[in-house]
Image 1: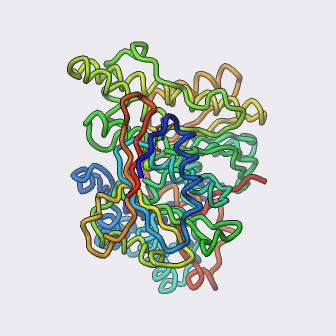
Image 2: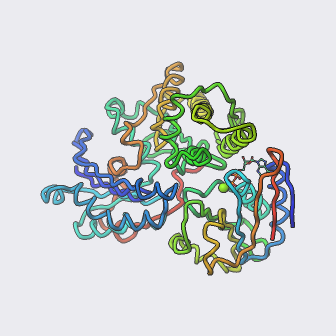
Image 3: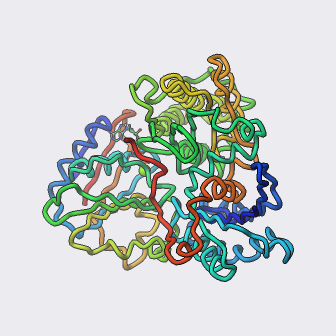
Length: 350
Length: 144
Ligand SMILES: Nc1ncnc2c1ncn2[C@@H]1O[C@H](COP(=O)(O)OP(=O)(O)O)[C@@H](O)[C@H]1O
Ligand SMILES: [Mg+2]
């Protein structure tokens, strides 16, 4: 079957055409992402109104490019669109476009949870997961991005339990805010990783927030504050130089990665997970990937992460989540009833 | 009113106390740099209003709405906004904030109000500013 995926929940307008064979083999026919990073950089962050306006401009060209030929569009079997969570003004553009297409083409439509799609980005990147099927469960998934820090227990396809989340700032937000404190620009993740590479990670000791807490929650606002205090201390004693910035980035990154790894492995052990999965923008961080994999392997737990291009928001993962949820798609109603929802969580504690 | 707090817990306690003073329909504008304690303060407000949910930073989603389990005076919901990534009043409209301001049953709190305060329609707010003190965990909180 052919699935068109559409994503507009945050700063990327994206569309993808996916073909999945009867035996579940995934073939990516197209993946178009119109990155808006350039527009956002000048504001030091994502500006939603600008984002929404850009989505309006981009959505039709992006979808048209993803479909490529007329013969493709006549064979689309399902439309999958991100309907939650995200910026409501941005989400609506994708959802309204998808509804219009579903109505015109008489194709079933399904709303996708963005977080679930990030989990499925692992299936796009690892052939082994496609072969293993249900054998990978239970799996513990760590979702880390600008707006999310969630530890989720995946018991089966479509069956999730939220184990923990951040109590204040998200990990990606911490990267962005620390980069802002250091005047390194936006987005903070890649730039801090780059500086960290040449820094020494043992020169400064930043806290490991909530590492001892008896739950799976996180806290990152204290790290941002610790970096701030450290910077003030430097400024009263002299001037901040390149080497110091590298050391700060390195120590900060180490603190973040240690907390994330520790809690994920703890959850995997407690819930006897066979697999650990990573997802979201911050899962592009190389230290996080290698550290988590190393610790998981020590315990004989398999560890997967998405290819770099699928850590960022994209529509391939939305289309694939559509495939896994295809039984819920409805030709009769969905284009009439589907609405966007800014806050809906993937799961709640039972 | 000027208060100096010496820990995040103290700031939360101050906010819990202050929560009793609001009737509904107010707009609180929080000012202060990164890490000055604005979100901590809102966590206290939420607690003071009886909200059990976790209140985390709305920087990314821009706006979060919390329902009170039981009305406090007329207040039935707390709207937590973060203008860190916003530019002007039009963007407040775009996220749908209009629906919540000046509503008798709603308390609206906006972090980084200074980013949009110049705009006339949003000028009527109670200003609360957060400043770093001499010692690391000291914060001076100024309530106008
Ligand atoms: N007296 C204090 N009041 C508030 N927060 C404090 C205080 N002392 C230390 N902190 C710490 O400062 C940080 C404040 O972070 P946050 O509330 O996210 O700031 P903001 O929202 O203003 O960026 C937290 O890590 C908190 O633990
Ligand atoms: Mg804040």
